[in-house]
Amino acid sequence: MKKIFFTKFLFGFFLLIHSQLIIAQSDDDYFMQDDTLADIVGITKYDAFCPILEGDSVRYCGKAPCTGWVKDYYPGTEKLIHQGSYDYGRISTTFTNYFFSGVIERTFFKKPNGDYYSFEVFDSLSKPVTKIEYYRTTVIKRQDFYPGGIMELDDVYEKKGRYIESQKYYYRNGKPYSELMLVDDKKNLYNYREFSKTGKLKFAGQKIRNPEINDYFSHGKWAYYDENGKIIKIENYVKGVLTE
Image (cartoon, rainbow, N blue to C red; front, side):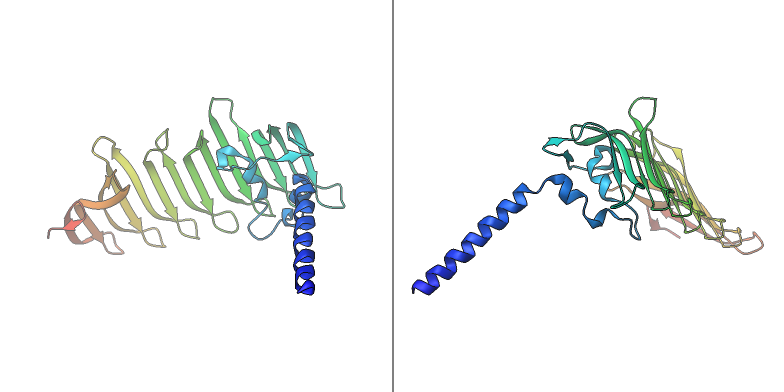
């Protein structure tokens, strides 16, 4: 009985000491562990301190939230991994991350025109991966790229991000795959076109957006084309329902 009690006492004492060690470890000690190193998806840990990027963490420098210009280096080197401007532990106006080679991995900065921000991510050869513009915390423009820097997606939103004004997708060869273009914001009406890999128009028509679910439905007359540009079929829709 005494042996069981003594074992439980030792186990409880170990848990107490372990928890105190965790508490004593500063946020900076935890933050600078090996997972700050770049991996296949990039150096993403610092995004957690940027409110515009929906980060909700507070970074500490010692016992106080970081304030002012902060620089971090790859462990054991003088090579920058990150530098940025902090205000009470949150990234305020700008930050830049770097690959070990010194090439910029991502950069974020506040534009001079009010509450607008720019965020860009690059691969190790400086080719673009993603470019995003924000109004406050809302995306108003987004561009995504295939490996090698060929554009895959180009989205432009209404100035407050409430709906898409234009959306363009591209094949890996750079030719357009599809485009959705706003023509009447009051009626939520868009023109839509889709293309083959050779750039020939495959079909075209209009779509209507349902603002309640933010989805798009075929509406009105749709035309389908062959490789020579000749119309081969006509369909008519009413809010996504084929009528003939």
